[in-house]
Amino acid sequence: MTLRLTSLRPLIQVFDMPTALAFYRDRLGFEIVQHSPEIDAPEGRYFHWAWLRLDGADLMLNTAYDAGERPAEPDPPRVAAHIDTGLFFGCPDVDATYEALRAAGLDPAPPRVAPYGMKQLWLTDPDGYQLCFQAPA
Image (cartoon, rainbow, N blue to C red; front, top):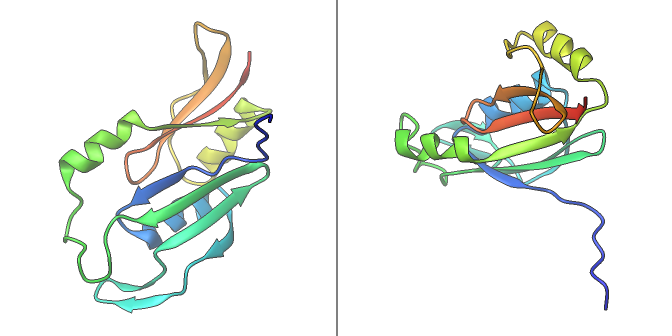
């Protein structure tokens, strides 16, 4: 038997789904493919899980806390550990992506070429995850 894969959809935990959607959907341009039912909770109306897509990139978001259990502020040690998670997106034009992100009100550092030959643009999402948009230099 040969292993055969058709896609990869990483799932990341987010503190606040509306904030995460404002970043991924409204600023980066991801579309919601599917989501869990909306709920009314002390934190507001939202859904716990969403599957997002932008071109060929899929990403799933899941709330880190159940309704009514979310603390008032993110847990600093938990968020600090998110920097260890990197999401790398294949990106045909890193310079154009840099300009698009700036036009969307984000402030990433300019793209740079890594020692291993990839032109990369780094950005941190609201939950502290590292996003890298890259292409061969």
